[in-house]
Amino acid sequence: MPFFKSRKSTNRRTDGTGFLTYSDAYQLIKENIDEAIEFYELEPAIVTEVLLDPNDFPKKDTPSGNGKMPDYSYLGTIRARFVESQDVGDVIDDYIKPLSPHMIAYPLIGEVVNIAKHGNQMYYYQPLNMRNHVNMNVANNVSTDPKVTAQTTEFNRNLLSEYGDVVINGRFGNGIKFGSDPFYQYPDIKITNRQSVPPQKIQDEHYPHLQNINADGSSIFITSGPARETDVLIPAVQTLTTPDILDGDMITINSDRLVFNTKETDIHMFSSRNLNLAAKDEINLELGLESIGGRITLGDAESTNPMVLGNQLQDLFEKLFTSLQSFTNSVSNATGVAEVGDAAKVMLDEVQNMKSNILPSILSDTVYITENQLEEISSIDEVEGDVETPVQVAGVRG
Image 1 (cartoon, rainbow, N blue to C red):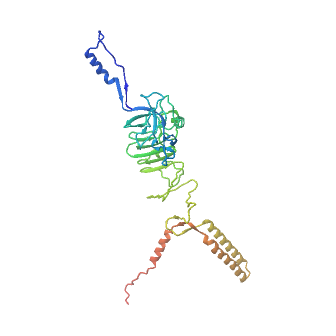
Image 2: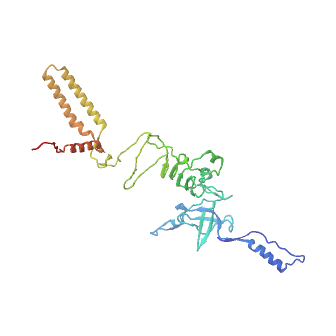
């Protein structure tokens, strides 16, 4: 609420008679009237309650009228005590709404906010930056919020910034910085969640946080221009395709785990050059447990050429080689044509069994691969080579 505050006491000057002359009175009023009282359009208030839990909301009738339910229109409102015009223990009667419905910084109990009134509704601004801390700015000698403590948030700091940066600092070690390279030429956007704790933070309570894509919990860096030391990602695994320099227009994501999921349709990944995947342990491509008749295709999404199953192929070769070895031994030890015929009959039965029982299961019904491009080119060349070209022989007449 607007309020007046006295700045200094009025000095009274008199002559020897004890009475003010006209000129003395005029001069005295001129010197003191503008400085005697300050007018404040906004009044600071100490937050005593923040309504974010539906259990704390005022109640209203249910649609059926048979009971009560939380009134969610009070979400984000606060209760507070004016610093200047109220005494300790007093509370403003009204529920105070955040000034903006779009960008809201909910205060903690004990923090100070400026309050203004429009019409019959009071509104509060963002918490005052009394201590230049991002985690909390509680006033002196007031009760604090038991849910958020200085001990659990003390290493969450302001993001280290440069000229012209636009910064959003969260209380809990998260933040976004809209900045540029050190030469103020190339833009970047850096999103950080769970700040790292270097030794300097332990030694200095105001030491700012330098965003580091390798040290912070999770990071999304949208960068451009030359590479910077703290922006260069250290890959979890080195490969022959790992680039030496990561620069230019780029988005880099780093965390302990990345999860991509679509609820309805597809995930598309495209590259104008190469698509490189690397892992320390395994790279898995699989169909979901609920999949029926699903396919994994390599090289051509419409391929009908199934891949060969390694175990089944090995089993077929082992049986075939064993049969050949047995036939060869029988033939080499045969003393007559009849024995050779018997050995041949045994081998024929074994081959027929392989053809009927093993060969049909040798192909995958899930993974398909494109036809060999070199074979396709050779086939085209063979077709073109079959076309006869008339040969003319000079000097011969029919």
